[in-house]
Length: 166
Image 1 (cartoon, rainbow, N blue to C red):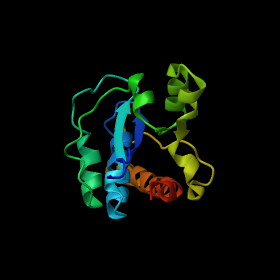
Image 2 (cartoon, rainbow, N blue to C red; image 1 turned 180 degrees about the vertical axis):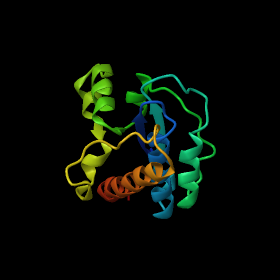
Image 3 (cartoon, rainbow, N blue to C red; image 1 turned 120 degrees about the horizontal axis):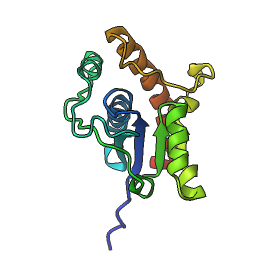
Image 4 (cartoon, rainbow, N blue to C red; image 1 turned 60 degrees about the vertical axis):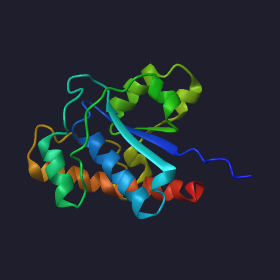
């Protein structure tokens, strides 16, 4: 008799409009899973707290920053976080404290609230910072800086989850 199929670990990254930070985190985390040979054990998605950009591509500066580091973010389409995402995901990662506050407000149970964490809280190299800054009103250099923060924190998060995924 075949072994039962293992359900993948599901993580959703959440920012404001789902066109800058959270798509970066989604793509980076998926790449980490693929590179470790665990791509079939992880589902990485993203969403925004707002609906302003639903259906749009990631910001071109996001796509370009990702490309400069060897990632492909061209397939991304923005979506808004919905309450169903709590049940559909094992972990809900907020990119800053304002997103975490909104998500905690939307959570309807302790179990849902317990799924929410801040991305930078996993990264000792962040020096206690908790918010990934929004690069939307800045230039390419800020997008690169933010991507670096997201890569570091995503690696730290993945290292913490990897033993359970194996």
